[in-house]
Length: 139
Image (cartoon, rainbow, N blue to C red):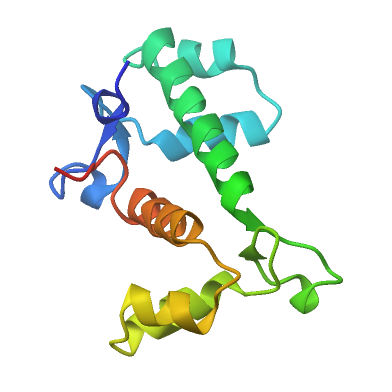
């Protein structure tokens, strides 16, 4: 199942919260259930409009997102006080966004921090896109 067919956001549905496609059930409800120690079956029993296929696809999407994140970003209390840094560097990910927020280009950031690869910087931006607009992909 494609990520864009799992969840969506519409300002007219729960104020724009991410909901499972074809329902008014927020994806956050699934995470809350699981964090609360309930099973996927319990969630599906309480929210019958969400199919097992949709719930599993959402969890798979989250798992893939975490795998990508772990390949790009690392956090260690002994490096920069535990701030998220680019893998194999001591460069905080925050620096990338600080540069971009002030109008600097990705190229300038990469020249200033040569230990960060273009691939890692672009992957961090893709992760940000996924957080800000889940399921929306570049054309």
